[in-house]
Image (cartoon, rainbow, N blue to C red; front, side):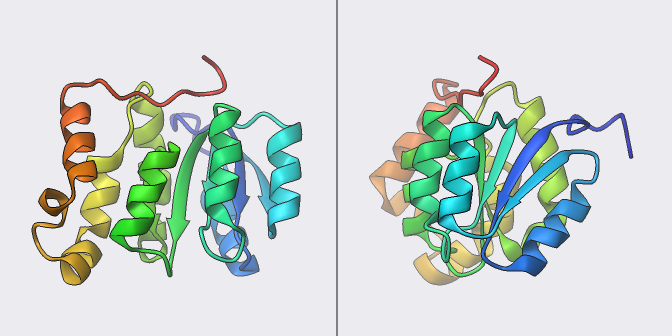
Length: 173
């Protein structure tokens, strides 16, 4: 275990319907206290009865957007980790609902670094940094190289980030 990591002793909930993903993320975050849930009901119960520093949600298979609503309502920093919902619409919905970041599962190896960056970000959303750099190829392929400029919601969100008007809350605030 590495005490230098900002993740050391953080309490994390990981929600995914794939047991191998739950195990992989748990191993990657060995410096954390990791709770795992493989379905919506278990995850919702965890969100309602525990305090989390970070929540990591799959989108498909566990009704991740509804769980995101619950997590954000409780003030938990929440990251969307998805394999099949890497679309601009899923990204926009994640932004709208208050997620801290969005990461395709193919970049799961970068999860620890992304989470550390979020924690160091002092409550700023991490959208237009590493997670979007990693997901960008998908968005360019599916929506074109000007995908951010095509949608007013992305343009407004990016401008608010530039002006540092957008912050994410945490359970500690």
